[in-house]
Image (tube, rainbow, N blue to C red):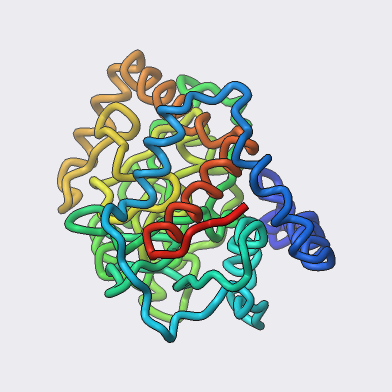
Length: 323
């Protein structure tokens, strides 16, 4: 019983109770109160670099030419709280409430691994190819955007790789087949409905931080643990990402922000051995990862970019935003 309670530790987790309370309170106030504040919200500039802000807006929203939405596209007023995917609704409403509810927008909630036929607001998108119809918002941030305060120094951590996760995808299963029970790895799946031979007990984030290397394998789309791993004093280990979210995974530089693995995982031992023998290079990667993560910590700046992404979406779909 004690072990089960320990695994339910909320250390290093976002505060779910506060998240749901705050988002339900937002729904109480009439939306026109927020619409009157849009202009002042967009004028926020304290400590901001305008060129940096615009680069990020254009990264998330790559719409260049005017594109009309289908007549069947719902208006913002039709965005309702459903029984499932509540976090997607809450994270969308946090910013959509500042705009005219008659404006139309195609929200596609969930793990998106393809580019829609019309401009849509999504959590994730493919990195390669023309992904301009996938306009990225900061969605599902309760789970994806969390960071850790790691007081454990890299030099004092176990020279091993740790992984705990749901394993349903062939690429995740392939990794387990190659390295399960390997002396340098403590890995396994936390589901036991398929391939139970690879099932292991859950492990808290704090226990993950005992290891020098943490595996960040993409799941249905991105690796959901990548953000907190890059905020830690451990090395994120992964192949080059193929999907991206608000975290801009497409901008991550191999062996600068994370330790690059070959797509077939065959060089894992060599990569781990190299960074154990070159701790200065490992620490440089960890520092670079921290710097990348830090750009997402300014809440007012994140709000501004989110609102500008939406504003550009409406304007590029022939819906001028009137203050």
